[in-house]
Image (cartoon, rainbow, N blue to C red; front, side, top):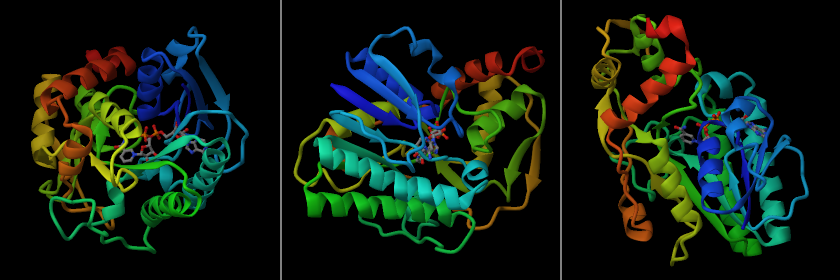
Length: 316
Ligand SMILES: NC(=O)c1ccc[n+]([C@@H]2O[C@H](COP(=O)([O-])OP(=O)(O)OC[C@H]3O[C@@H](n4cnc5c(N)ncnc54)[C@H](O)[C@@H]3O)[C@@H](O)[C@H]2O)c1
């Protein structure tokens, strides 16, 4: 198959491109390099089935493909709040452009949605039926509401134009090729620990998150894309239900880096969700999927990556 991956030079996108190529597909990786890097896919340049296109999804593009994975969108608060209007445009206009293409060439399309559509959830763990508790006018809204509209567009193109759609709600994912300075908690903690700096915990550290290793996530979204089942167009949570407080995560990072951990507390940012944990029964039932990589193992690999990427000062 010829497969388009928008945001393909980003953290998750680069792992996805790699896996799709390994499975024998042609891959077109499209990216504007806002948070993605050529270095993330440089090891794929020698593969004749791989193409890299510099393009912004807010502009239309003509391509003939069989499947589209729409991942283009900055994912960390530092980046999506840098230019919030552009973040909304990327989610909404990008989605319209990609759905237009899917409709025209009859490609199947998967949208990378997010657990952020649940906002600061009032039910726990979150099932796909939950409509969420999202602030529509806060600093996180450009991302959360942009992704919610993208889901609306997916469902409307499916109902109105019979486009073959898939929506994955991705919960916190970590692994190699995350950016070291993008403010996401796993990369923050690992980089701070390797540099011998105190780990920054916002609030008292009792808030929880669930962390899915990149290879598990990629496996789940490829299964979703290629599954045909009753109700498959409705959103599917993909994440690791193992739930950790930030204090527990700090301990795990201490073990994975072999460093003595110190903690620095800062005030909680506005609208920071208190708890986050996916209910993955739907993914288990429809896709036969569940995560395989435990946090300690995924952290070890992530630490190895950052140890090499942040250089000698870190490994000292
Ligand atoms: N990593 C997570 O924990 C997580 C959780 C939920 C959802 N997601 C979603 O998964 C997708 C990938 O996230 P990631 O963690 O790899 O983030 P990332 O920032 O590493 O990747 C996003 C990619 O999209 C590209 N991009 C951004 N705006 C673009 C535009 N207008 N046109 C073309 N390319 C553009 C960036 O340059 C980057 O390569 C995103 O849509 C994100 O919202 C990620």
